[in-house]
Length: 329
Image (cartoon, rainbow, N blue to C red):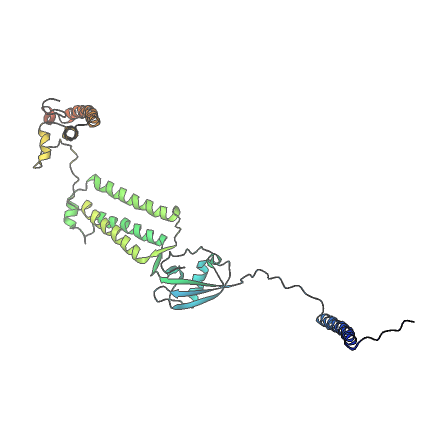
């Protein structure tokens, strides 16, 4: 019989340690799995992380600052995305009654252009708060009012001078002097012109910009009304006579350049031809010489044609003159 050897003390300890370590590891794994299962059961079903939806802004807030001081004037709140800038101006007017919508100028930047009333407020938004700069445009008038006022004045003012009011002209002189037909024709044409403008303003023109500063209308009225008064005073004056319509041939004056009228009937062509001949002599180039030659031919034809016309209308004054070149042609 083989006798069973008893393990030595150190080997026995190692076996016990290995067996005890295996038991300890198995026991720890069991506890960890148990704890994890209890955690899952207590937490319930696992949920996937929520998906962020695209945020939709229901209303905007419009902050309005003074363009000069950058101080806040007011905040227009609860502005729907579909609103236009004109809607914002109306709400701003409710908050600040001294500035009615046509007087309000709004800008995205201090030095930027004024925004149109028709622009959609959502197109200006970067966030839920929109900052705009305010400028007081001053008193405004509509374009229709502007043109009606500007054109009605000349129409009425001219008629007041045409009827020769006693406060403007001497009545004795007005009754004594006969009105030339051109005075009546001028009144008809002048009135017809401004009546046409008024009808176009009422029924034809459509104005995109709603308003303009009142000072522009004052300047326009001062220009049209002032010149109409000046024009009408002279045309309707009792001593007015239209200029003589009889044409006469030009005669030389103290201006030396007019003295050629003594020798030729078309001195303008003479000066033109002389200048190109002088330019040719100065430059001594072939292209200039050819151009000058062709100009002499062309202007000679024009001068001959005009000279024949002048002989028919002003024979006594022109019969001893040449057309373009003194004595020769």
